[in-house]
Length: 133
Length: 91
Image (cartoon, rainbow over all chains, first blue to last red; front, top):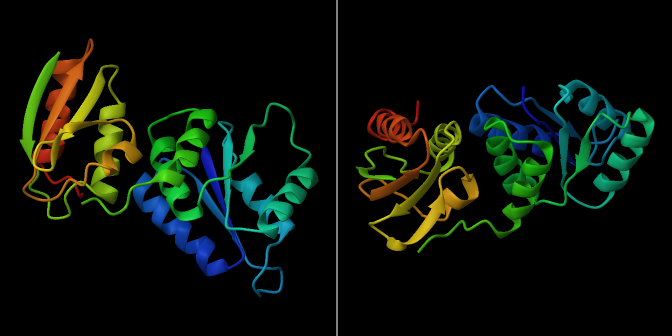
């Protein structure tokens, strides 16, 4: 398998949309789960949904979590505490930009790279050149 | 070391999905694979196994790219990339 991704956003639509874009780029070799919105469907983040997404995504080769902003980080850290992950379950929270990072991480994961390599590539997406002239 | 030049026929160039296919194909080989976009900036070289690196080349339809492969499976890598670029890369 490959490193899996979890997309965390304050909006369910944003999380699902970023997942869809990343899935198209990665083909069907990378498992990507989205956790967006608060428990009542409003804008916000939900530690339980994030924990569920991490558990579903985890294929044993590591999980990279990408977040939009603010409390998404806190909720993800809460989710990780709730899961009490074993030391051998490799899960990393990324500081990468959400869309760019997810696309780069998905493609990099699809080439069979390790969690460390996927995380590093995602972080480099901060400097992605979009307008080439 | 082997070098080959291909013309990009794909209407979307080498962006997004086609770029991802290209990177995945290159990454499947042990050899190092470098790519340059001769139609834009022939001096700038990118790692063909890195999606970020490939995207910086701004490869569009009609552009000519140069691929330099170095390693034990270089001939197979060139052929795989040729088949991908000259076939329907957007598939």
